[in-house]
Image (cartoon, rainbow, N blue to C red):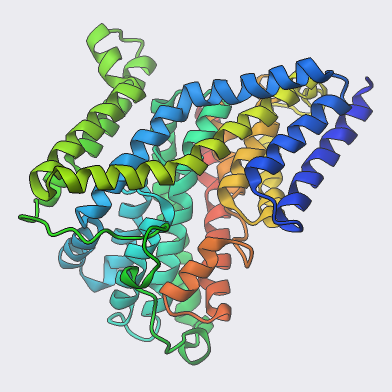
Length: 453
């Protein structure tokens, strides 16, 4: 088949996936698999080869990140029931004070708390952020809403074990320890600078509390339907554990993963370090440690309940990440990487900007950060070798682009709007504009990394 026909069918596939998700409200998992089927058949792979690539692509991604996602979600479920977030925010407020709390809370959420399922993290932290915002003056709600939106969305795609970060690393075959280190290099300045820029906007009169905030009561975690995302179990802690104790297993796991990445870059080999720093083993140890802490302070039945809730939450996440691998495998088998490789040059900054633009367009169309990141990564996976760029830069660029223009089709947009007590107009400023600013700011450290890699 000609190169032109393959490119046309790829474009039709992407457009069809977007239409199925947005117009016909089809589940993204089904839409991505249907798109993979069409692409394989339309590019001449044949029935057997198409099915083989779809199943192999799903299996490859699950083999690489499936356990990591499950372990991360389970750790987050126990942390949620230990009420770690509420206590952490209270501690941050005491340590950093009201002036610096937007930055402190945002950086903590974007880096430390990414194992917690997004809706749960948002439902717990949203009311806390609004309460703090009321104490920061007339622009306090705007500052806290923006900080929370930027932190949540950036954490998903830049920070391990965020769902988007795991998907991007898995689909583009980036070592997880390496993604962890370079993701932190990107996310910390991105969150800090983006919040500072938005604070300047608000200080110059861009926020009108009379029009951008609503006086209605916010939805609290307890008011949400029991059993769904965001439900917080009513657990009577025997004795509140110290925060360093609560987070030590997760932080220890991340330190182990980072240690493995540093050892690899220094070309230092030790079998014990290699075993303990492998992401699966490190996160497994983190999960075991978190379970032991939960058992000590909540009791075994409460831990089992939290784990059951985490397993329910992880199902759709695992499927969605896996089908991203289906699309990537079919694209690679169709030869798209060789075709597009002719039009890209690794000697300029243009490829990274094109990666960012592709993910941004997909996000505007689909309205989901995770889906657009996964889809763009699937499209880029077969192209990555021909670009001559370090795959971690391609992954980070796709993640940055997928943040652009969080808008009305996003569930996160409406949760932030209601939980932070904003009008739709206010949420467009704090969420849509705020996260878009972060999306553009992230290009700075990514392009800077390109100069040294």
